[in-house]
Length: 165
Ligand code: GSY
Image 1 (cartoon, protein in one colour):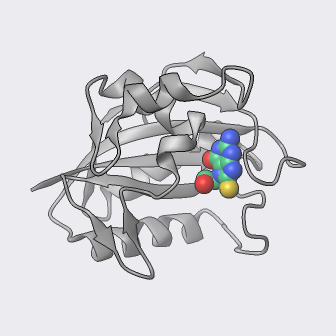
Image 2 (cartoon, rainbow, N blue to C red):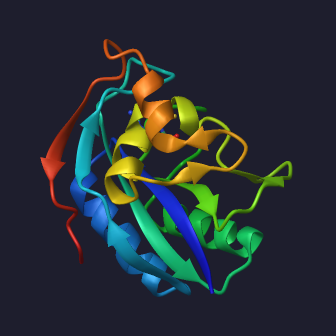
């Protein structure tokens, strides 16, 4: 059984409902959510002229290999109505595989650890809340990455507990 950390994000429609529904649907697809961070409201990174996101990180257990896990996370995104119109544009639900055990994967369709996770407050803040001592393979402690971010950038505020379905 592998342990993975997934980042969830939504900035369209019922944002909280989408995070909750993602957990419910993952459970039905061989991906068992064990723990979740709080939910954070975060300023959009990348394309900034879009609505604020709700973000969280969940820890999951699964027997799926990494590419099979990716297929299931994409199936859940699609089931929640995600349309890949604009790269870095608004979305009902985004699920990124951040970490998969201690694996390092570099395939065209999947990179693990997620290649930009160490520079994103919307990932690091919930991840460190959930697992304070977590190390990003090839990068270092997530806590150190979070501390290295410019405090003036990427504002985020905690909204409270994750809405477990
Ligand atoms: O890569 C995830 C989608 N995404 C997000 C996000 O989830 N949160 C914030 N704050 N900004 C983002 N930009 C993109 S793209």
